[in-house]
Amino acid sequence: MTTEDVTPEHDRLASVVRQHAGPLAAALMRITGDFATAEDLVQDAVLAALRHWPEEGIPDRPDAWLFTVARRRALDGFRRADNYRAKLAQLQWPVPPAADERLRLIFTCCHPALSREAQVALTLRVVCGLTTEQIARAFLVRETAIARRITRAKRKIADAGIPYRVPDDDELAPRLTEVLTVIYLLFNEGYLATAGPPQSRDLAEDAEWLTGLLHQLMPTEPEVAGLLALIRLHRARAAARFSAEGEIVRLQDQDRSRWDTDAIADAIRLLTRTARRKRPGPYQLQAAIVACHAEAERWEDTDWEQIVLLYDMLLHLAPSPVTRLHRAIAVRYSTGARAAMSELNDLAEVLGEYHLYHATRAELLRELGEPDQAKTADRRALELTANPAEQAVLHQRLTWA
Amino acid sequence: MKYVLLFVEEEQFARDLEAMGPAERERAYQRVYEWMDTHADKIRGGNKLQPAETATTVRLGGGEPVITDGPFVEGKEVVSGYTEIEVADLDEALRMVSTWPGCPIIEIRPLM
Image (cartoon, rainbow over all chains, first blue to last red):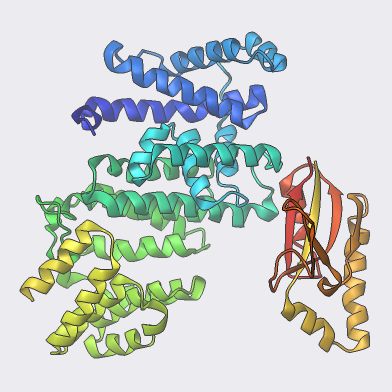
């Protein structure tokens, strides 16, 4: 990675590209009626922008610039497809805006008939305008692997007849869940990797931007608002999550004065407004749990009873052993370590390969006066995590505890 | 677009069908016929296959053809029938199979 990748100018470039790539893809998609063609043209235009803009500066109308490049490329390139040429030749700037088309793009990229990996790569490229190289770097995967993934996905969209449209009402709920899963995965990837290469930070930002876009396009969907609030509540506290050395700072040790209290208040207002729709869902509940933490001025002020209650509601809607583990942690602070331990014991079988299960067990064992067993659990957790920042915490505990 | 729906049975499904009384089995078949009727305008053909034990697999390419008893993949899941359909796109095919009352797995393959 070169230093220019992380300069403020580069950030601005990336955000300008992201803002305009999706609408351009949507417009080209409408004209050509062909997903793969539209996607190729956008990618070409984005690459041209990344080549020219750092030297020539960002143009006054980046959207018109990108459009002109894509159009010229299309007219040059598609000798075979006379119908595209004819359509594109007629096309003039400005293209009439159509918010709904970006929604179609998102739903096509996240179609359940595509693999999760393909959904993620396509969404980043088509909706956020990332290049193949940027995606590869963010996921620490070879560029050729990402390129192959995208090519295969585009072929499947064409050959298997994956439609380019927003799902009908009767199928909207599961398909929206699919989209939110993709975005949440992106967010987690970016959020957890914060100690990794600086470029990875973009994914959390991309995830927030995507959710914001989706919220703007589907303002009455409570789970979209819930995910947006959840991501914003996390990002509002990001500055306190890592030490200067890049190590994770535990929630109880974080300097809460570094939290962005305005952003927290905004996110909580969004969540409260959304709750009035009385259509609770897993993202709204997770956001509410994070809000409990974000609202506490000190660790000691955390409302653990409320958090346990919210976890109960979450488990009711979306049963999961990992959620039960998190609930057990809340039980530790509301009731005590022994109660939490007995909940953990029930999870031994399903979460035996999950590092946080063992890390949590280690903490409880230490509190219950079993330092040797605690060390064994920490060691097990260390074996199971691949995340360098989490490894560092566990190493430190093994050395000092 | 044209697709073929490959209906796939598992051992459990075959056992459940086996365990049914005649009236119950009749009702199960009836539900499949009803589904076929409902979607008749999109169905272009298809058939139920004889059980996998009746299959014969031939492998070519290495001198003499090698003939073996049984389906080409040994497994718990076997193709038990197919239907060719013509619908607008994959979503319509997905919506169609979501109400399929028979075997538990369906593979949707576009035709060339």
